[in-house]
Length: 219
Image (tube, rainbow, N blue to C red):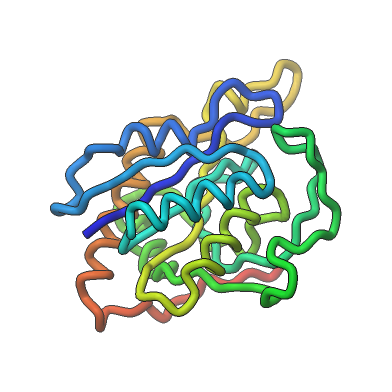
């Protein structure tokens, strides 16, 4: 089995991005015999999707998990849906700031993750990792990549989706402000490794499917 794990370069003035640090740490780790390829994506609209599609063609993965940073979130956020819109609150690393622009002109309004998101959340919870199902991946480059991933793989027998990671403690620290949620790098690496192992187990069991447990939200 082949796994593609992506992370982003730093953006928004940060010097690090935990999504790429986690992917780097897991490159070469034994995941029940699965081969894992780590890929860093630029935090740039358009170019990030191009690099991803090139990697999909090169590696022909069976499982794809794209990682991103979501400052202010607690724990691991497993994303449910990608929407067909770029609406940037800040410029990307190339200075682009699209507003209400489709990721794929003429594409569907949205795609669901093909990861067994509730099975993954349940497994992480049982292992003691903080995790929740997220109903939105935002409208920045993370959602852009998530939508492009699902659009490219539509109709194929590939398990794919997006997972947001919280800030590192050093990112969250702000002088004179309440400290927002954060998670140590070692804990993030352990959680994502567990998530990937659950993906491998679910992919190997074609009848596993997802579990029917609550993962909804009021707001």
